[in-house]
Length: 108
Image (cartoon, rainbow, N blue to C red; front, top):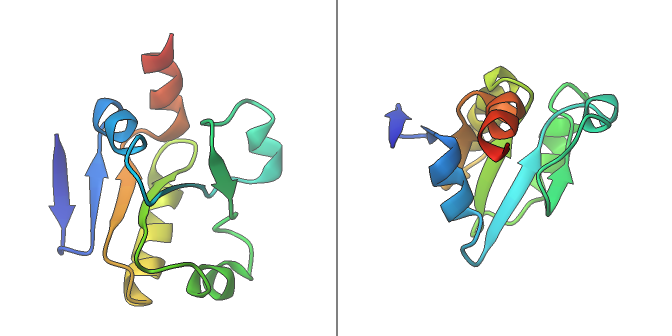
């Protein structure tokens, strides 16, 4: 199902991600580049490129009461984004294991 790393965020599989995205007060955060998004996105996502130097500042303005489902292409950058956000006081963070690549495999 999911595993917790230092109790700051959890890495979840595609089926758990799909269930959680149906819940109220959940934000789907795509931390890829706009170019990567041309290959597809998860419906309802909000884009905030974790590699952008403004990411930390932009993330700090998000609502900490929400649950964030974070994804990138393969899962590395989403974990990075979760670590950054956890340091900013967010505590409901979930990274998609395998990223959008895993999502595409499960969605077909």
